[in-house]
Amino acid sequence: MNTNTPPPLDSQSAAPSVQARSGWKQKLLIVSCVFFGVTGVGAASAAWWYQYNLNTPSFKPVQLSLAEQKEVAEKIAALENEPEPSDPAKTIILNEREINGYLEQQGFGETVKVNINKSGLGATILAPVDESVPLFGGRTLRLKVAFNTQLNEDKRFALSLADVSVSGISLPNAWLGNIKGLNLLDGESNGEIAGLRAFAAGVKSLNMRNGEMRLVLND
Image (tube, rainbow, N blue to C red; front, side, top):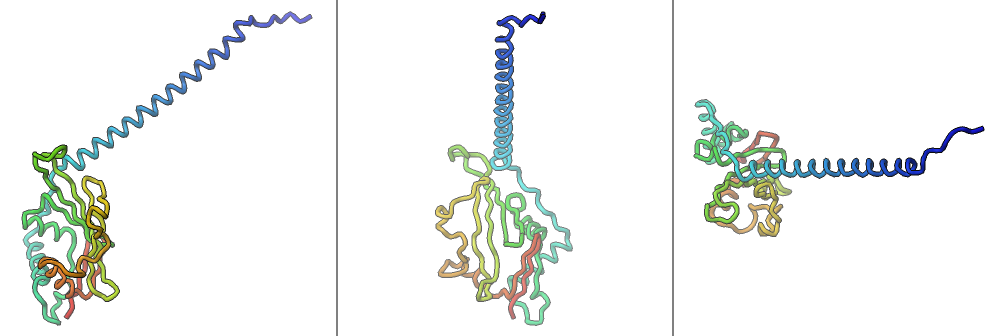
């Protein structure tokens, strides 16, 4: 004879109810953790973006030694003057440290920083905004400009704008007059660009690599 007594009906119905409530609480806990995690990451990212792009401290200027200053001055003089065909200064190597040190000597060490990579030249500029400008007034914006430098199919030095970004946001090409990718040394231009074109005509070869630029001048 079976003496097992089935459990009361209310106990059987209570078990699924407890499990359902437990599962609901687990889901709520998971959703809450995800929400607060995403919110925390977003807040941290926003704080980093604000500090990096709108509350930017000045660059630490590059201080060249006296020997480095003399060497850079000789290289700049070689670029500004036409060397003799046998002059070893026809091959000129400039690195980031020398360029940024030269900018410091010209009074731009805290606001402009140049970098060199395989594709070309880049510059980061810290630009203070006038107090009267809405939203960004009194802040310092971080501007980045990237140029592609290469020899074109005619073996002539070509300089083209690769990108311009403001506070980490790349500006559309249309806002820049659709000049991205165009050789800035082609066509008619004002005196300053014309002078740069004359300099470019004297470049025989150009080699860019991380942190260094090698120029060989024409005879």
